[in-house]
Amino acid sequence: MKILCATTGERCPRGLEHAESLDWHERNGYLTDSRFGWANAANALLDQANDDALFLDDDITLTPSTFHTFPEVDQHADVIGFTLFTRGNITSAGFHALPNGDLRPQGNLIDLFRPSYVAHVTASCMWISRQVIDAGIRFPVWPGQHHEDVAFTYECWLKGFRVAYVPGVVLHDLDASMGVGATKAKLADFNQQRAVNAQCLRQWIADNDVAGAVKDGRIPTAFRGLE
Image 1 (cartoon, rainbow, N blue to C red):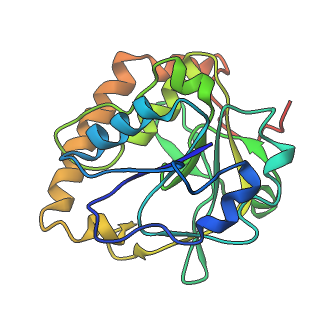
Image 2 (tube, rainbow, N blue to C red; image 1 turned 90 degrees about the horizontal axis):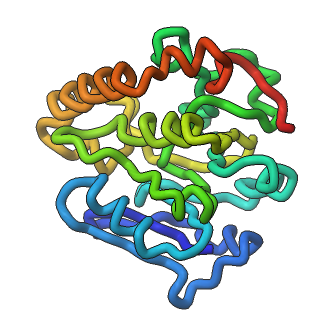
């Protein structure tokens, strides 16, 4: 497995030693890219992976419990996300789809403690199988910031892959006032750039008939246990 990090180079993810259970080896196993445009860097890393990959933001910390339930899930899903905590609060634990293709977070507390299929998990900490990478699924390159990973996980479902959530703790250095990781929060015009990509995502959802995939059950709208 490779660990991939699109980063400005100012910081790096911490706790990488906890990924050793995923057959990750530090030598030649950690790849970074700092080219302009997050999606450009992220896609260049996926192009180099040639293996399963753990995609990480540079402002997260893996913990001893991150991958505790992972062995129960990786044979049942192609993309897997985790529970992100910021200063003791859960900020991401998988998302379900609404009928129009928008997202809502898992709201039932009990669901946060059991693996399940979900519409979306954040790329702040996302395991991606080699099958997904080899299928050519990539993050869309849009002119703003944020939201590219929503299109990524939706495309996985649309192409027959499965996205899952596992209750493994990941710490995320999040700027709570902006609802975004500390690295992106430093961008002076981030809110404006996020609005640009929000519009791109809305158009992508329409162009790819995500609402139709939600309606016919291809994309989860509520808790769905692993097959």
